[in-house]
Length: 512
Ligand SMILES: [Zn+2]
Image (cartoon, rainbow, N blue to C red; front, side, top):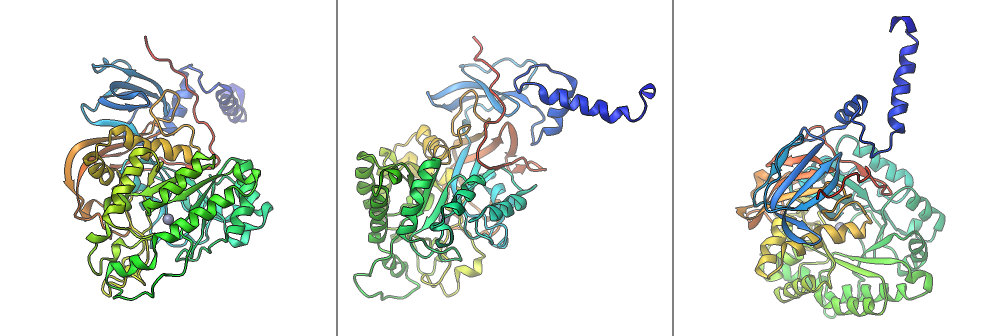
């Protein structure tokens, strides 16, 4: 290179880089620079950018079948039903036997509390726990962090805090509050900054995130309708209690009576009225988060039948636990709305199985254990939030299979529908062209949830000691093995999702 002179070297490097980035993403050149570049980008516990997964049970949109799934550069290239493992060739074939390969789980409701409250949770611990639970994408709620995600600057603070910490992919909901509620320009700026939708509260949130009035919601709906982004609502509208609250605060029943199901019904009715208040509002998608009251479902179903764009989630704790089973002082079960009785739990399951409830979420909302006031056991004053990411899949499956649910139901509740809500078009199913996001798990493995396996920061959880069926073995995010049998990729492989853009192009075809 001497004859070119030393100043030519940077020019040559720049020219090579320019030539590389001019290549179409599906260019199959196999050139040395591309290989070197791909190698630099590789992350995770598996040292291969192209490989095939095989299992007797792959959950596809066409059913649960024995199949091979070929991955290249983070994208599913083809899915081929096959009763036999494909032969090995240039690329590794990973045979998972009878373990289930399912689309990676998507949790649209998680509080990671960073920046500002990393003693509650954190982006590193929260996403690592989610990865251990088979989640490949989570969407962070705008509250419990300081600042709350209510402006473009505050979203930037989240993105800055995310650097080098995300074990999986993370999107962000923005907050609709009284400060930005009547201000279309402020809301537009927040939506333009890349949040996946907005979240608001119709009751006090319990932290420094203020509740919105139905007028703020009504004002925001036309804008959200134009953007095609959802409004997520904590749907409890406080009403006067029918009888004065009495009873010891250490008894769960006392807390349960303080937040009756009528609050949920009042909120949902008000939301339906808001959606119907104008043709522009009717275009907006409203999503009821963490429904606890199953008797609200007929309201929702009737509104949907008449064209209102309304979806609803419930959480693992509402379908796992029941009020009758919560002992005195057990404030780790406290959340809002409250976990209700057994009969209500049965009806929530019916709602899930019939499709009246669209999807599941964790509402992972931890706090330092002292905020749970365990010694006093005061349900009325303790922090309301259940820590649960990591256990969503086994907790759901344990109850679901008793009720005749299938693996496809689990994939619908935990992957397909949540990805649809957050409009993650490349996620949520195992199909050619989608991100290679997978959870590989054993649905027959029985085990007890123990503290030493918990990856989230504060280990207090009502799931500790629960015997569950179903064990997560491996988690892939965009083709990167980020978690395998309790081991985690380092450095981490997750990326923030800001106004989703399609990733690497689909290049393959199903082999004939
Ligand atoms: Zn929440």
